[in-house]
Amino acid sequence: MELHGVTSFSWSRAVSHALPTHHHLAICGKRFRVFCAIDANEMKNQLTVSITGATGFIGRRLVQRLHADNHNIRVLTRSKSKAELIFPAREFPRIVIAEEPGWKDCIQGSDGVVNLAGMPISTRWSSEIKKEIKQSRIRVTSKVVSLINDTPDAARPTVLVSATAVGYYGTSETAVFDERSPSGNDYLAEVCREWEATALGVNKDVRVALIRIGVVLGKEGGALAKMIPLFMMFAGGPLGSGKQWFSWIHLDDIVNLIYEALTNPSYKVGVINGTAPNPVKLAELCKRLGDAMGRPSWLPVPEFALKAVLGEGATVVLEGQRVIPARAKELGFSFKYPSVQDALNAILS
Image 1 (cartoon, rainbow, N blue to C red):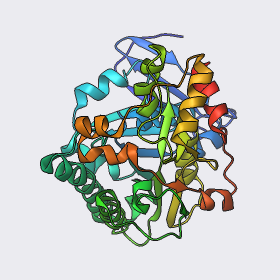
Image 2: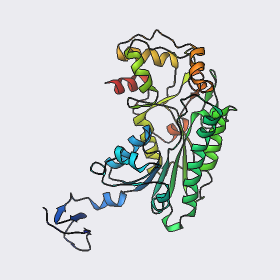
Image 3: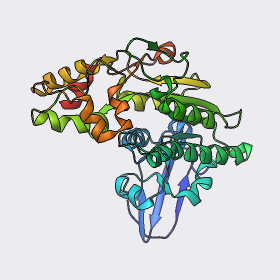
Image 4: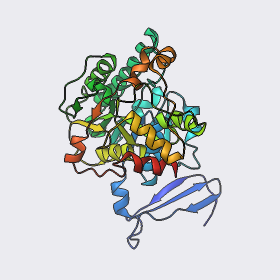
């Protein structure tokens, strides 16, 4: 039904006791539109979530998931114009997009905050790039924590889900790492320690979940987006020796894990490994990717070539770690894609 006017309002049970649901009506210009009724319980369960890194590979899918479940989303970004292209208002009507000066108002009144921001590490590392890799994570996390801490108690978010990485553990071909394992002693381990320590500076009344994320598999981004074209050209194969461990997780599973940590109070303060329960050697991943694509996995990329292109950054792909999601299992999290073959088949189908 359409009428004309210039305002919007909610028609609640207080107005119409006969209505079993909550109705929202909006009037724009002289147009009067009655939206679909929303059950009162659903309204009660709606969350308002502020997200940094929302325009990234994981962030985009998380926003889609939250939007599909009728939650209110506040995208905290450095580029409003970029975010508006990714999340157009006609498709995402419940999204508020804010650049840094507006982050404070977004975080105040949010139920939760998800912090995913950080410069990608799959690039050639110079001293300047290494500094930016660390600072991009520390700076945003520090700002988010400060804004949460400065928020009045009544308006403060009750949960912070903050990304970190399996690089925390360092690298090894033989060790098995879970959430109780000590940190490594390389550059990425140092970055992760500082990243996590910054997040843990949040107000003690805020529930904190630190998600140590592995290599995320999906068609639209991450490692596979770079590997698939090579296999399509019959030029795919393992990187380096292929003996390094590859602790992976499907995009849907990492989004579901973040969602669960955000909405489930059982996910109390602490670390959760964001990896699938069955890590594989990189050579196995490449073979299974080739099988799924009907392509051979015969052309290895030698270590010296990767170092020539990526410099010190080649350690990201030449060295790995075998990480087990012990905490997620204890919490009863159900992985949609526990095996890499199932994950690849779903991605490539």
